[in-house]
Length: 118
Length: 112
Image 1 (cartoon, each protein chain N blue to C red):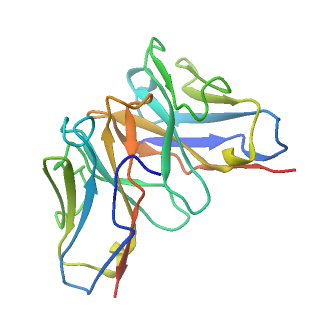
Image 2 (image 1 turned 45 degrees about the vertical axis):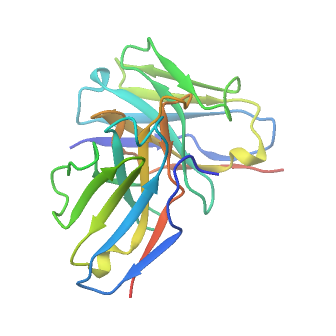
Image 3 (image 1 turned 60 degrees about the vertical axis):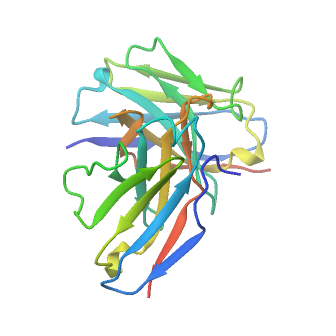
């Protein structure tokens, strides 16, 4: 069974840093591209970062570029999102998702809440 | 403002059919057959319902179907059931997006 489990969220002050982790199981993690998608309270979905299976290609949304860093450890089956210089508007539930079938996210984690507030 | 345009809400009675539209441009919906639809119940993660415009993942009811015409994709749910009440999001590959994935703003489906 494919499972994705995020961790590392919480309450952080503006300007602070957090690192999210996503533990994968039930599939060959090293064969799949991965996304981080976030959802602000009461709002829609936003894809904020993408990483290829070999780490050769990485993309960021303009809203997080220069502040967030995506990475992965294929041996440990872990996906990461390092978030620096956090802003109030980064408050959201963050999901990791597996990519397949033409940029489709076929499996999602349960999500982790990040609250940026003073 | 989301890249893809969806109606904010739709509603239908049990047993009826509804259709949710998702309008983009030639740089996303109209240019590629990479449209997906996700169902999200309150407090839960999105679940994939349709991919590549009209393909259903294993386990998804055949009451759900997808189509596309020009720059507009559609999700049709037939034989509405109470459990279908949820938010629905479309997504597409987008050549103009820095992450190459764009979403619609979401549609709240109410089963009357």
